[in-house]
Image (cartoon, rainbow, N blue to C red):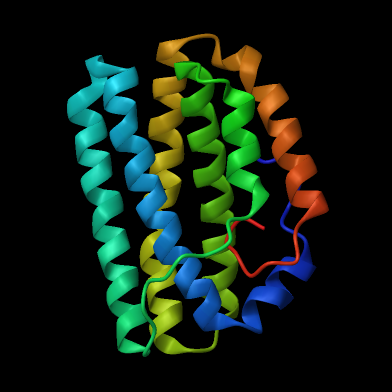
Length: 179
């Protein structure tokens, strides 16, 4: 789905700071659950499906948070990367575009979790990333199908994918899943 692969500089940056990345993973799962819950109000016809998806994302949040806590960390505010905010602004509140953005973000998450599960050396982190990877891929397909049902996804996806490619190529000097 993505137009560009994750740059190696991203992988090198996050591998050097595994606990900071885990902290961001916790935040990402929390944000994913919140985004899906908000969709219930924008697209009430799919409320039951969004509710199931939000519960799954909350389960991932709890799983990542438990590992963060076991490793001596705790949930604290983080400076967000530009990535998700820029994509959300580009959706302009449109349901179809918002769902397409969610699918794009999940696709990038799946790609990066795949990189992490094959490059992280610590068994507990590797196991978490391996466990989170398949659901992310499943969420991509689900959210894309919702986007296509909600509107002209084929018209909004090229613009959003181009923006996503630009953001990934530019990157940020942050240890974040989406930086």
